Amino acid sequence: MSDTRRKIMRVLSGESLSPPPLWLMRQAGRYLPEYRETRAKAGSFLDLCYTPDHAVEVTLQPIRRYGFDAAILFSDILVIPDAMKRNVRFTEGYGPEMDPIDEAGIGSLNGEEVVDYLRPVLETVRRLREELPVETTLLGFCGAPWTVATYMIAGHGTPDQAPARLFAYKHPRAFEHLLMLLADVSTDYLVAQIDAGADAVQIFDSWAGVLGEKEFEAFAIRPVARMIASVKSRRPHARIIAFAKGAGYQLKTYRQKTGADAIGLDWSVPLAFAAELQKDGPVQGNLDPMRVVAGGRALEEGIDDILQHLGNGPLIFNLGHGITPQADPEHVRLLVDRVRGGA
Image (cartoon, rainbow, N blue to C red; front, top):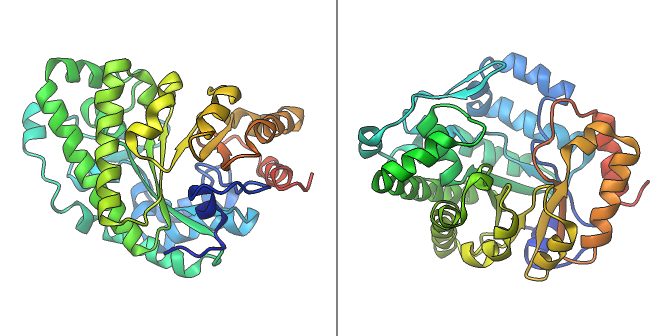
């Protein structure tokens, strides 16, 4: 059970705090020189994820530098297909790749050994909870089934996830089986993270925005609702943030349909709409990461607008997507100071 001093956990329970607690997606990343040093020592990206010494270190780096209110486990959403023996690899300058899966491959998938395979990640969670300041929330995470499935179908990232959308239309039963298997395996993984010491978890649906209305219901809502219901039935104290990037108007009922405690908002969500969503519970977001790159007035105005519109309700201040490698660490310092009232 989380410490009552952890501000993010208080917001996830519905409290409104001023100033709001904050953390940044991808806060442990390439914009930090200390991360780049550790990354070079680790070898491959997956070695960085699976070596607790390195994963703990890079998770703690932004906490030491900025004192964020949450640390998020350093890992990747694609450790799930890697644990399912899909030959995941990360190519410098290109991104993640894996063996694309077909109907036969989906039929032969086995998720029984996934959590055991990911024991090094769970060891990282255990060590982080021991090493983090008592007031710092520890967040675990996983990818949403739809987003993970898009990489498994195509074998790599694509601009609009057309391969997965086409596969879903042509092979609906196989695709539904894949989504539900991913939902169940990911649920086990999240429960294991909570048991290892994570205070709360986030489900990343980075590609929700490419889906039509019916597909959003079937691919983005149904599997995530299945996950959240299962996690909460097994760990009633669990707190879950669901982030459906690009979902737009479909966010209106996303919280109610999925059962999420808080919903993450990308930077395209209008703040007036965000304020309406906040009436139903906590929201997280939603500064454009490019404002952190730009700095100056663009950064200040973006922060102030969010605080003006959302600062009186339950808010976790964050970016609308991950921080980019081009971000100046000093701009992040200015962001933290301004949100906390020091600028």
